[in-house]
Structure formats: C-alpha cells, structure tokens
Image (cartoon, rainbow, N blue to C red; front, side, top):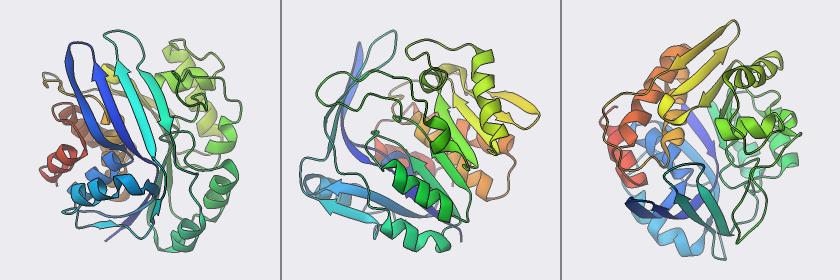
Length: 300
C-alpha cells in the first residue's frame, strides 16, 4: 500500500458566518488527513502540535487507523489559534492569534525514501521555513503536491491578514509536480493582491508553472469548481449541484486529498480532479474534520 506524507499545520479554528452556523475545533491539515484515513490510505503526518490541543487531537483521530503520528511533534505554547469570519460577500477575514514554530525538517528528510507521494500545505504561512522546504524538495524522489494556501498572507498576529505580492513564489513552486492555489492566491502571484484575476490571468500563471516543470496546476474557484491546467489542456472541473451547504471550510483541502489519492492510483489529472471535486462537493454538507473523515469513509 502506498504511503502518503503530509506536511502542514493543525489549527484550532474559531469560525463565524453571517446568517449561518459557526464552528469551533481543530482544522488545518487535519482535513487532508481525514480524507486520506477515511479512504483507508496510509498517511504519515508531519506537524508541530500544541500540547493544549493534544487531547482533542488524540480523541479526534483515535479511529483513524491508517494515520502515522511519529512525525507529530508536541510543543509547548498556545498553538495555532485562528479566528475566521465569512461575510456574505467578499473574502473571509482571518486573524492569527498565535502560531507554533516552523517545522524541523529532519524527520521528513529521514522518511522521504519511504514515501510514495508527499503533500505540503502552507496552512498558516509560518509552517516551514523556505530553506527547509528547498531541502525537502531537493531530496524527494516521490511526486510532490504543494498547496500554497497562506503563503501570500501577511505574517502578522492579532490583526486581519491581507494578501500581499510575493515574488518568491517561483522559488517555492519550482520542481513541484502538482500545484494548488485559489483565485485570491493567484492574484497575489501576479502582483495584484486583493483583486479578482481574470481567467486569462489565471491561465498565465498556470502556463508559467507548467513551463517550470509542474505536471498539473489546480486553481480552485469556489462555487465554480476548479480550473485544471496541464500541458496543452485547460479544463473546468464543475462542482456537484444541489448539495446543501452547511460549512465550506476545508473543501479545498478535501479536493486536494481526494485528487492526490486518485493520481497515486494511476488516474489522469482530469479523472483525479473529478473525484476530488466530487468529495469536495459532498464536504460542504458537513462541518469539521471528524465529519469529513466519516464522509470520506463512505467513498472508500
């Protein structure tokens, strides 16, 4: 059985929405882990976990039988506390109250030869230092998926974080086999943070990544689905219709893990993304990582 490596940050989320139910609990990279484990895939998790979240983490994951926790480093301090607010219109408001230290890459580097696929998610922007990511990327022999996620958010605490231009994005993505971003992140990549990029601008970023060696670029578009770009092909992957929306948090993460599983099984990027979108479309009907695990189990 393939073993997936998963790099990212476990967050403690406090989520509020206008005219909708909120959520308080663990999140971040646990959404991808929930999908891998729900689909009965072996996954090694590499993360720094705050001691105050340890009990909730162990309770939440006690039935995730394929989750390997030797790469979970338990650290002191308040952990990654995130306050999120989703307005009826516009981008979500994110405030980081505290963070854990960047991940030490030693355990990952030691394990790389035994991994069949490595997924890295920049959940907070403080997850891993650039120099350490470059070491991991250089030594990896398996396919790499990078979700840039919060890489372009301001590195500050206790205030709403805004997207900023990030000219170093090519250093982070060069040599990555599969790249995931959303529209807001693409806007930061082209140097116009806070704007809504056109489809042409999205495609240009995809073309730049493909020319640098990326096999496929996935740009998530919310209710519109995702735009998949491979060499010589651009395709829109649609969301399933008529699914009741309870909580859209983590849907991009669910899409990521579902797509990766199918890529590892030999599906082409289109088939893989269609499965990932099927899972993500269903995931809006549940809330939290525990419910996401149960949902993935039904698709195993």
